[in-house]
Structures are given as structure tokens and as C-alpha cells.
Image 1: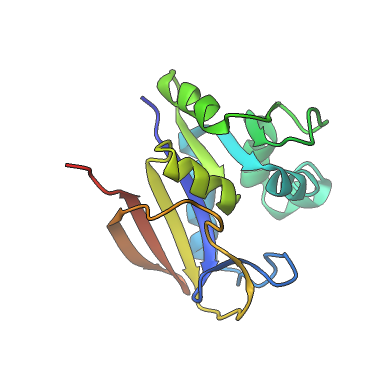
Image 2: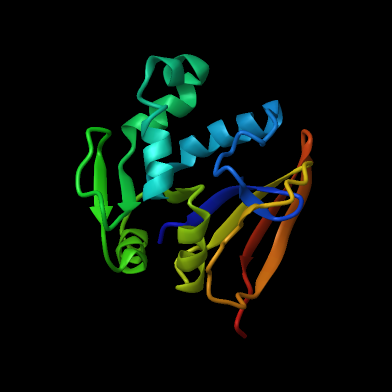
Length: 186
């Protein structure tokens, strides 16, 4: 069975995006960027919500995206994407499958099939729902050394509580990198 992981960035005070709805606050970090590039070697499917998809689709297929980080651009542009959306059903940035209902069921069926890992990039609200549905096996969270004071909380709207166990914590450049798995129910 494949592993589904969510890779998230968060401010020290728990916000995934700032009050303006952007990720511009996240400081550049060469170690974290290297780790992010390395994840591409282990995945063959990317899962995103509509807003994250539109943000990524506006950047990675462009010449600027390819010039900025050719490794990430290659896997973002080439790998199949599953997008949770009730408003989009097609887009030129492919290969993409749009799922309007039962996203957790769709991802669970992919997870049960053959292949490499499945990554949820950003899309923290979707990640929270997939975590609550038991689909996500691992959370990879980079905590940036910044306090935003306002914004969208990580996993906003997720039904909880969702017990987790920390299976890793380390410094990664200026950030702290935390790894969690759903807590055993035994």
C-alpha cells in the first residue's frame, strides 16, 4: 500500500497563510528547499485543493517556474494531479483529475493501488479532512520562525480532535521540521 503524506508550512503561531491569503511570509531556506526537491523522487501523484492548484498552475508551467527550480518544476508539471474542486472540471495544466465529491474515497482508492507515495502539497484544509478520514499516513510540517498574528490556521475546519504522535523533530535551516503520524488506536 502506498503512503499518503501532507507537506505543510506554518508560522510559529499556527497560520498556514497570512491575512492577505499569501505564502509570501515564508522565508527562503536552502535546506528546506533541498528536502522539498527530494520528495519528488518518492512520489507519483500530487493531491491539492482548488486554490493551491490554481496558485501552482499559475507558476510551475511558466518559464519563471522552470528557471527558478527545474527539479520541482519537472515533477509538478509531469506528475498526475488530483484536485478537490466543485468549480473546476478541466484545466490545461495536466495531467489532472478533478474530484468534486468523496475526495477521501478517491485518494483511499489510489492509496490501495500500486505506485509510489502520494503527496498533499499545501491545501491544509483538504489535508485536515483527509487526516480526519484516515487517509493521511504522515504529516510533514515546517515551522517557520515568524509570528504572523493573523491568517488561516493550519488544518482550519478539520473535525477534531485527531490524536497524533510525533515521530521526528529536527532543525532544518531556520525552520523546525516536525513529522507526525496518526496515533495508534490500540
